[in-house]
Image 1: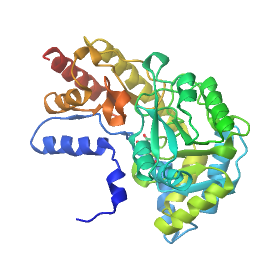
Image 2 (image 1 turned 90 degrees about the horizontal axis):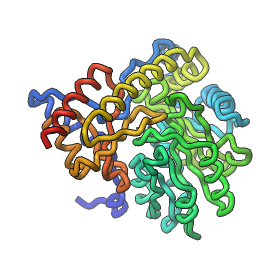
Image 3 (image 1 turned 180 degrees about the vertical axis):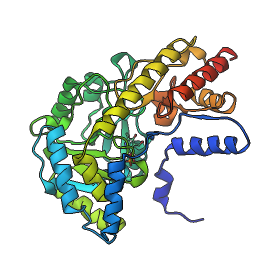
Length: 387
Ligand code: PLP
């Protein structure tokens, strides 16, 4: 088949491949604990579902403006103004079918072939994939376990060249659960100012954070003029299948991304945007309950992993992943993750699914019950003992 050349540069997200393999093993009768996919296992809160159902009944089933329904953009503007402590106008906000299209379209709109983009590594694989796709070069900014999976400011400075166009950050982070500090954000902002760079900050886990305050680079005075901030409904409100994300950016960039939307998917599902309004402006107690439960699971998981000989796990401060260090087991991460799935029946991802600095680690999602996490720990421990 003759595909366009550019497709050879497009990567993928192996969570979906592992999910398919785990399902195939299940179809053969094998018991699998699913800890591979990054999706909350809670139902979408009822008030949010009701808002969408009412919208369908009210015939909100037609096209809407490509940047989003005006009242939904207003809800995003006031939510972001409040949570990021910065004044955001409606014109700076756009809604798309998930954070992912915002990531894709932002890189597509702002990065030229031949540019360099600094990305966290290990990191969400879509950044590297899309940067490669547009013909730019991903420059890996290592995240360091000893720094709770933050980066070194000296490393960051040394990675900037005349070709650097953008720095991508993600906090709380997938896959490590690391959370950047004010001083990290300030350093990124200063480097971006000095070299006139774009910042794309992926804040999809902004509300899934434990014991520390979420901080956004957008709060730094002046940062929003060079920043595209991306968040969405998938993780915070357990709405992965609704496909709702939003971005805040300079107005000219919002207009450009709107043009891309017009050329691509026309608009985000109209009635779903009533659910977004309800989620952002309605009661937040379901979110708080979910985050408390995630924290309980995290503690059980980290505790259990640290009891396994040869495994050590840093306490993640955000998101819903643990990223244990498995170097002492002496097996390459990919082989280990495959063995844990095939032989122990626990679906997890190799750290290398998130880039080369993920070697020596594996990622488990704890979007599963404490009982299942305990079962997974038992299975992993037995598997590791038998190595
Ligand atoms: N960004 C990060 C860091 C993620 O982990 C994910 C999903 O796993 C996304 C973006 C995609 O979110 P959405 O479902 O809104 O497209």
